[in-house]
Length: 368
Ligand code: SAH
Image (cartoon, rainbow, N blue to C red; front, side, top):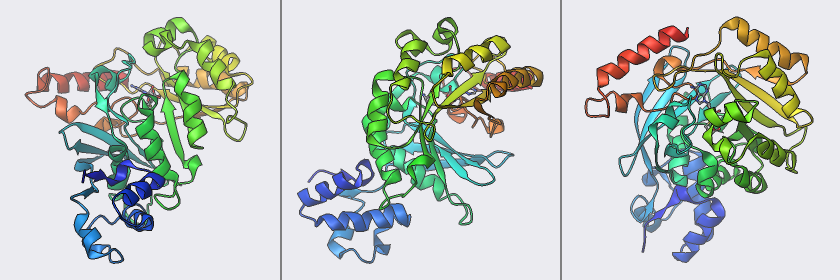
């Protein structure tokens, strides 16, 4: 019989796969309880499973899709995990502890095909989609890093890659996250972010009641074409028009907009005013993220005064707005910095290692 990768399948599909192998479907629920609810992956400890099923685990029924290669801790408590897949591909996931919650930011692709001009992942290019099991394993492996008094409370699909270009795997992973018999996260504690793959958005929200985040970053097509090349296919009016049509969006369930502030590019008060009018009548929350500098992009964050002026226009218009503090930037774990710095500074990686590191230092200084 073919190998079955357990974490590739939502529970209903795992039950079917069990049945096809002559196993009672309810054994799938028992296995899910060990793996997802209790975080146990050692078959020996799954005491309510029969010995022959335990013997098949790890072999014919594969549990693990990733290895956790390293965990790096930033000064502010943010932790970045570097994970390795069976084919050697490497990816990153970031744990962000806050006062009343702990969020994990997961990757959905190795690299990213969208090539947004300010994003370090975009500069890597695209290698491949992650499998559902590889998304799920980021959650399984990194929540195990947390101390018991700090449970994982939120998962955001905002790491490397564009989730909606890998929708089938993302959906299976999300189903496992929100299934009470698997991870059991409340759907509102799971957020999927897209740069605006318009045709896939309705299918996401129809399938799972998670939060939708949209990376907007600009208020004119001319600027957004430069920052998010996908805008040439789905320009602002098409994107926002589609969002207005979504039956799932309401005051109780607004769209989260990410707006990365780039000095001199999209940070003027006129930009803020345009943002207000673009979002008029659309239930929204705006998350403003000052650019996290990195060596692959020529942009910088605005100074504090410019940020204040931008935020003031939004709050005068009573838009719900938050300013996202940069977290983990000293270990390149902040938004848009996920590009496997360690891999790229290795001597055999493209470009000379020491040069990469020196450039990074220079940019970091100029960005302050
Ligand atoms: N591809 C999806 C998921 C990635 S989310 C999307 O674009 O929504 C990662 C978020 O970080 C996006 O909003 C992205 O635009 C933002 N980001 C990318 N590079 C950044 C940088 N250098 N500084 C701040 N935010 C950045």
